[in-house]
Image 1 (spheres, rainbow, N blue to C red):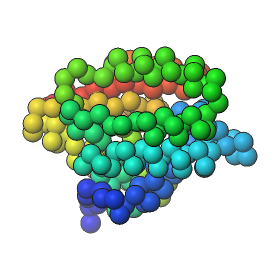
Image 2 (cartoon, helix red, strand yellow):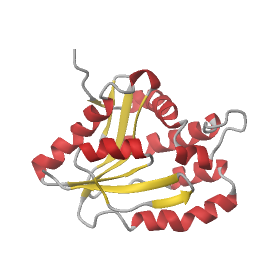
Image 3 (cartoon, one colour):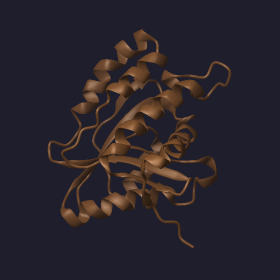
Image 4 (cartoon, rainbow, N blue to C red):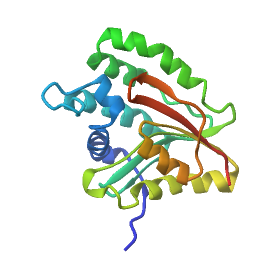
Length: 196
């Protein structure tokens, strides 16, 4: 039976947080900013839990967080809605040295310059648990919103944190419009998708 996505609700909060921690614990961006001192190549469990709780708490309220049972999830905001990232910024600052936050701030401002001026869906996070990788979870979750974009003529935007994820997004019509490098091998790639 083909897996399907469903709209997440507040009762899914813990599952969503755990999914995002597992999905991003080896992501270069998070490993760079919040490394686990005892596990090279991994992000700090405490830091990721704090940040992902803030992420889920913010995005879940916008009615476009989707999941494939307990295997994968995606956090979107719809056109005209900007997430309140105050809690995320606070969580980030609790786990990242102040000098790194200060150095990264202009780069986050630069990232903002790539966001489309037109109303758009924004994919903030998408990820799958280890046991679900390579099973089409990303496609299921992307199709959930890109089909709305195509039907209603809406642009979609995201920032890829790896070449592998950028490849997935490119297969779904996203085009890379820039690269913002935070450190050697650590970059975010803004990507825009026009409706089909």
